[in-house]
Image (cartoon, rainbow, N blue to C red; front, side, top):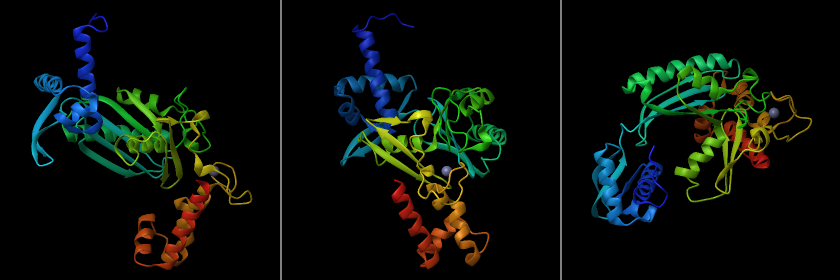
Length: 314
Ligand SMILES: [Zn+2]
């Protein structure tokens, strides 16, 4: 640790360096002119910092063109650190290994019934992370962090699933802590819809906005809410659980124990059950979408009705 006083020459330099690194990390790759614009630093300062970061192997600089002029693009070096993403869905598990230059190096996805047993899910995830790291050619010590998405509300205080009724097989489990112990890596956990919202806020449709709602429609339905530039979680992390809003008090019984939740009208299990008698038992949601595109009236009806229900819930 350095003992620089704030405002000294070298602490200012370090602050500028961190600003440049942050800008590059968020964007993936930027020209030096873009870094200068984004950070408010002078072109000469940016040029010096980039040279220093390049010499230390933190960034790589490549020739590119910007507006028809030759420019140099700066991105984080592939060796600067490895990150792992783990996504638990209700019906799948997906793991990706990437570097800080925003490149996915290895990726794998497998069908899994996450609701049944958390331990089984963790076993699979652990094995997948090990296999993918090996495939990408990196040792586990290179991993600077793991991002974990789970399809249920997370209580940020305890790290445990906030409403266990929504993921019955995960009762009393803190998925982040459990995986951190198994992998020996720092794990950051959040609800998958919150992470989707965060992704859109930083890199996607929500760039530059301070308030947005991200609606996740998969096997289940959820929402990630951004208020004032921050994820809004609500009590026990349940703010975005729109899948369990009651639409019909006399409706079908939901897996959460209530009746007529939005999810009972738009969840994949329900939607497929409406069509299997005419289209066969091995029907999948992607196939329903494909058939709808081809003009199948039954599939179109089911999708249109689900859209209306989701609209009401939202
Ligand atoms: Zn429900």
